[in-house]
Length: 128
Image 1 (cartoon, rainbow, N blue to C red):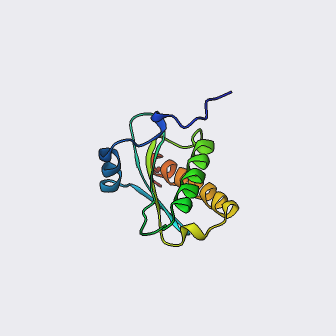
Image 2: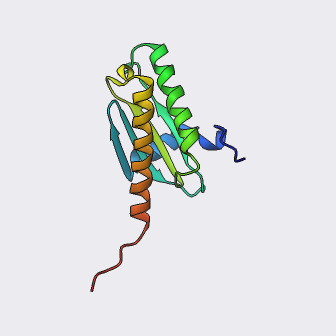
């Protein structure tokens, strides 16, 4: 059985890690109440960082619920994801999403991100 934990290797840990993704985001995936920014890394494994501000999600209980659900979704999808650094940002209204709706939305966002990264990494063949 593969290790599907959420170890330190799977997280963006420093402000520099976050800043690097914000400054050089190659991929953007939008969802209702959420935004994912991503850039390729050289570590061979995906990493995720979360930004859930008080401005966009007022109550701590809502921020914690959203972070817990995003981490769990990432943990389940990380085997399929390419080697990218991802920052998940909350937008206004994110706390209004039900758990099952959020789970479905995150699943779709992970798939779109995977598809976008794979599409960019595969060189297109010139047509003759």
